[in-house]
Image (tube, rainbow, N blue to C red; front, top):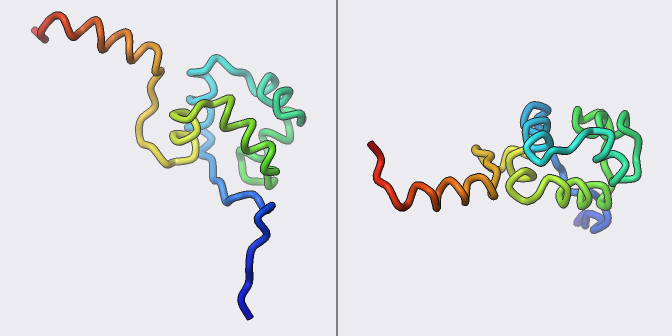
Length: 101
């Protein structure tokens, strides 16, 4: 018998606590603020990050939006580097005019 997983089941997402913390701080977000945006308690959000509770699809979507795509990929271990896109763009354009010394 084939098992068709329910499409409403959340994807398996694994956060690294350190990476999640770094991505959140880079965006200037607090755990309390993120929890409010996700309409859950800060404690519930912490349990999700530490893998003690399974998040809903809606919560995952809200977390992803708050962290931004680079932050989400870093926090979930899908990317090895985390950078502030705004700062990275400004630094790149400033360094284009002068060679490294």
